[in-house]
Length: 389
Ligand code: GLA
Image (cartoon, rainbow, N blue to C red; front, side, top):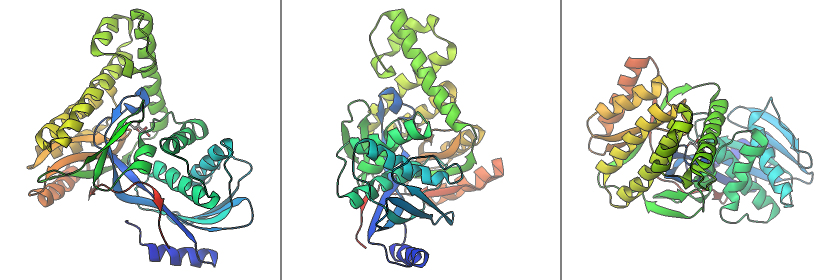
């Protein structure tokens, strides 16, 4: 719980002239390892963080959402019987997109005055969008008196991204934002949706998230390009090897080497990242279960190297930050996290050296790049839900 509830209620009341009766929230996330594997039906290991999106609401008699985005001080209205994009108010599209998916499922949609307030940094790879989608879903569930069960809830959020917003993202962000549990990291099989909540406890180490302060333009198109290159590798291996399979999950490193001559170099390297990253993610989950910070750190470093060299989704600032982190006392490992092209890194750092680690990371990053960086230590938070007002 990172947003002050009382202050949020006063703000809602000031804006709408009436008190809210519904409160819902959903967290952002950091991915420990398993990057760009979800849309390849692979494995991921994210953790919900103590940063959240909160929505306060008051039902109204008209089928519309009257929304106030407190962070941006913007107000806008959207009907619940016609679902259109709002280019001037992109934040509203997440609410409209969730409503649209619910309408396609014939779920009842009720109107409300709502205020959105969040402290997940936007556009930094910590899934502010997924947290807004999952908070919006909780809102419509409360207003309509229904529940979307199990993995159907995050899948609905994924469809908002894929079908309404045009980003070919996987299931990870919405899944952890909905299903996360305090004190746990979530190991997810993105094909079967089987998952395991693994205690996020190490003797003497914790995860440190640091924001490079850069977000590259064109992230969406480069992301979709990676998705297409993975599909190209699958097609190439299917036709060359005559092996059945729909996603990179279905292929091994031996398959990839056998088909290498028939693949474009980029498709080969993207696939090599994904296949090896799946193996690292499973090994990382074992290391986490065993409380082996040294092994987890080693796997995080190897993941980062693969994302830099083969998947090509890092950037000079991310590379500078992970390199600095690895050189500091008490760092077990460091990697970029999220889609990449800017955004955040996650490091596993020893508790005894935590304060000097955080200070030195910020100082040296600024000296090298001229950029300020926010450094956050977060425990593992609970997934989305309602809270009493
Ligand atoms: C973004 C997407 C996720 C996932 C990551 C990369 O966060 O929303 O589905 O693909 O990038 O691992």
